[in-house]
Image (cartoon, rainbow, N blue to C red; front, side, top):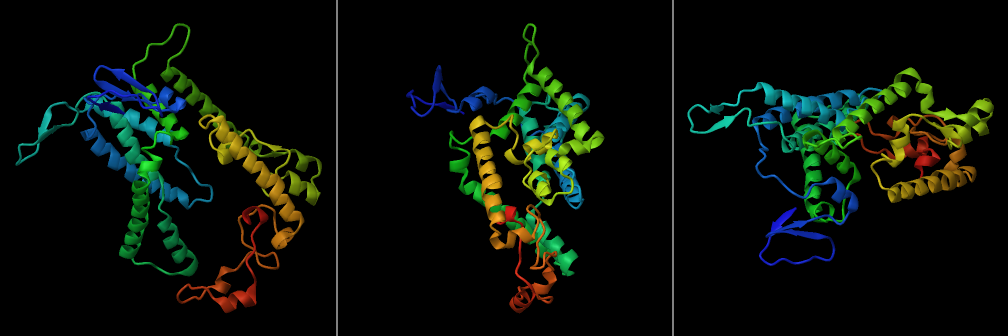
Length: 370
């Protein structure tokens, strides 16, 4: 962030560099200083014709695809990096093919250019923000879907629309309230955002390749091709390497061995994987997060899964030994899947206390108990 001040001063909480009358306020976080440029080019166009055309179109397409794939048993995730790379191609294609002559709006003196110049980094960032808003499905959609499919209750379109808008705007409201603490605070930083910034800089900044080395863009392309080639192996050719349980191999018919070694329904002791999505599924991307965060998450994971949960299971806390150790299902007192319709009033979908008392308490696996 650049500030112009008459009286130069040094702030103790982070470094300040002076350049003439301009004071450049840098971040106190080393990773941020190495990734985020502190200078801004105000001459770069932002709200261009490309932004207004590609932004809403990509957002609409991604919103449709996200909602469509959400109902699949095997959910198809569209990574943000894929969207960003597609936007590079589309933006540069429009910059190369669209005419640069001004276009006048009929009946007014206002005009605009369909091609104000090369596709720049600010346009790319704005397009990514607009497009990525379509990658998140509103939780209110799940409410309407559950009512329709499981309870045959149909919600009025306008009521559903207002509910979705209210829930989404509530989130934006909280974002504005905590902006001072979560965004403007220089000590609050988000490692995954640095990956996006590094990508934008690698694509748009002109960099000379060092002698006997590679540039950032070349390094990015090498990593992209390598990660794609590696992802194909566990996803298509050898899906079995996503979860290899050694203990289960040697004691195939032992219930205790399955409980200890199964990476799906047990403790997962002795299980390992070659699937990157499984590696980063719990702790996040180990390349992006700092070591302290990974250690913190790993210690919590070990204490929870290998200390607290086994103790609760073997002491039969909440009848834990009657049900699978790790399962998303809900169970009744007999170990069968819980029949929700027995405890819900059919007319208004409210809780039926008498039905609950006559049917069964609701039980969950010990992993989701704590």
